[in-house]
Image (tube, rainbow, N blue to C red):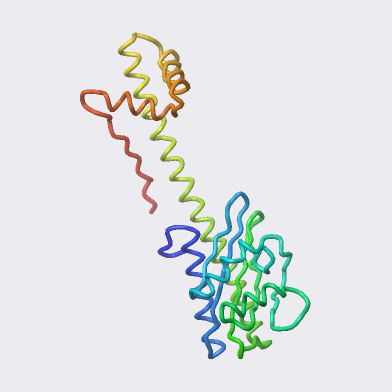
Length: 230
């Protein structure tokens, strides 16, 4: 979460941290790919290396890998060079320079899900010890990612509220201008704005802004600052 501008950056930081932790534990380079699924949103993907990022991003196109939405994986799963399931995914692993994958579902709030995929080379294997370390990291990642998503959600809500307040202020000031010019009520002034909005296929805020920009002194500025947090 620290220093991240949004969910995608938080996911990238998580993938990088996961790769560093597992590489240190294994004594060999272990890359990490990460995907975040949220309702009514496109998946967000990240990777600790270009190959890991490309592998993760390709799953949106193919939709038959362990990171795809609805893959139904709930436990850590090792995908090697044998087995009946994930044959197409195994081929993509090899194409991106990896020989084995440890897929780790990350628990999040209802409506959201995430998956970490630890990627080893063809000569590396995920021992029982490494699988336990990955499971421990997944628990930490779950708490961290939940917090990051909550914080980013609060920030988005604040930005949306600011836009609503600024839009409302522009409309109210424009209505005041129309009221003074036409000696009419607020309801009549807003009706004029709404009518122009429909006729010109514009948003009411856009019509209001055009009225304010036409004023001799120009449009008044609106400024909203978040309250200071002690």
